[in-house]
Structures are given as structure tokens and as C-alpha cells.
Image (cartoon, rainbow, N blue to C red; front, side):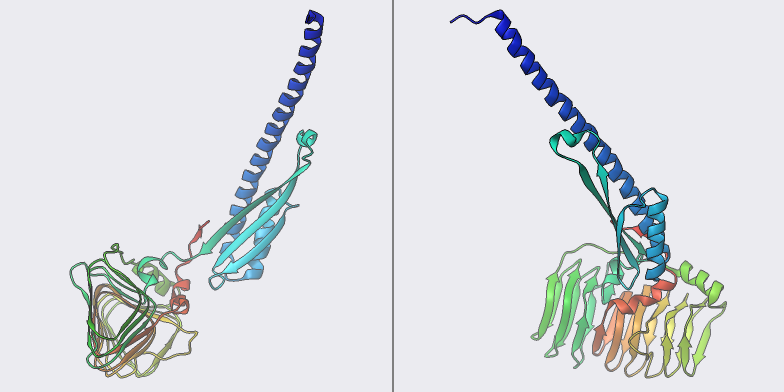
Length: 360
């Protein structure tokens, strides 16, 4: 069979034309995909800015939503659809946006438009909500076990427990209930036949305790109460601000209530039978920077957080009930303890923990 040169030239021309069409088509597709990728990056930057700006207005969801829309428009995305959602007591905002872009050259493949989506979540505060403050009971000592002595009374913890050393429960026939995780750097020793623990996690990692004393000091100087000497508080006390004491505090009050932080550089002592009472929407932080916190009574009711990052929390005599958290370098329980932790008992932080950050 004889193939003419003229026939081969014709076939080559057709193949070349087809190949050029494909190459040009793929080039057009690459150009359009690159263009869409650039638009997606622009939209993501705009959404990040919108989320950060909206977080400044929290907890007002109306203002935050309006701010997010304004920032999208300013960045050239007036046509983008937007959805804004909120979480964590309106201290976290998520902005999602979608916009369609027309392909310039990829129509030869039947691709006319592309939907570009971006999402960002920003949070107001939360700097101190990780680590130690994730636990209902937290013992920061590297050198001493967290020891719970029941002394004839049951122990109940709604939440998790952490020790930077080991954990020991001396309960005999008394019960120990921990609904969350028992998380320890060292060993777990349970001297009781009645224990119910959500999950035991020995040989875990060391966790630091934060220092927010300067934030409390500045808040007290600005809109709270600042004392340059030690103080004694008598009678009922309502707290609606930061109280900073450059010394120690003696509480002889029967009750106190409110939302805020009571701070002392040195020891804090409670001498009467009831340390704190208030409705479930209230919470307080009792914070000793360098000293100890003693409850020298037959049973205390506390709603909030007891915090002694460099000292010891001591709860003597009787059954103590804490609607919040106990976080300290060392903790001593002489008697039963009930601890009920929830996100609401950290509301006091909102007055000073106001930093804005992207979390995704």
C-alpha cells in the first residue's frame, strides 16, 4: 500500500489544529482557575476582616452583623451573600460569604460561572479560657499530689480534674464522682470502693496557670475600687466591679453576691458560714495573687472561681459547695466537696478579657 506525502501533510494539519484547540482551551481553563483562586483569596481576606471587625461589637449581635456587612462591601464584595452566626454566649462570631464569578475563557468547556466561598470565625476574649480554666478542680503543684480526704462525706465533681503531680482519694466507703476526665501528670490512687470517674488519664502533660493580675488592677483603677492597704469586709457585700486590694482580705460577711473579681495580693480569709450566694446568672472570682485562700467555716456556698495560682486553697470543716471552679497551686479538702462547673461561672472574665483573635 502506498501513502502519499500530500495525504500525510493533510492529516498532520488536522491533528495540529486539534491539538492547538485543546492547548488553547486548557490555557484558558488555567487562566480562569487562577483568576478564581485570586478572587477566593480576596474574599477570604475580606471575610477575615469582617469577622475581626464584627467581634469588636460583641455581644451585640445586631451591631456585629451590620459591621460584617459593611466590611464586605468596603472590600468590593457588595454582591456577595453573607451569613453571620454566633456562639459561646455571643462572644464568638462566624462570617460566611459566597459570590459568583464569571469565567472569561472557560466557556468553551461549558463552564460559565464559579461560586467562591469563604468563612472566618473571630472571638472576643477567651485568652484565659484554655488550660487551667478548663477544669473544675485544678492543682498546679509539680511536687505534691492532689489529695481529697472525704472524712465521712461524699465528693462530687461535675466537670474535669487536673493535677500537675498525682491524684489520691482517701474515701474508704465514701463515694467519689467525677463526671469528666481525671487528668494527672503522675499516678492515680483511689482508696475507696465507690468511685465513678468519666475517664482516667494519668501521665498527662503539665499545664501552667495564667496571671491576669495586671488586668484586674487596671480595671479596678479605671472603673472599680482600688485599696492600697489590707481590708476587712463586714456585713453583706454586693460586687459589681473589680476590687483590688494591695494586701490581704478578711471577709466577715454572711453573704456577698454579684459579678466581678475580688483580688488580693496576699491571703484571703473567709470567717463566716456562708461565703457567697447569688442567682445562677451571677459569678465571681476570688483571686489571691501570692497568698492562700482559707474558708474557716462549717460549710461555704461559692458561686464562681476560687483562684490562688501561687498559694493554697483550704476548705475546712463540713460540706462545701462550689458552683464554679477551684484552681490553685495546692488544694486541701478536709471534708466533703461538691463542685459544679459550667461556662457561666467564667462570665467574670468578660470585663477584662476583651482581646480579639481569629480562631479559624
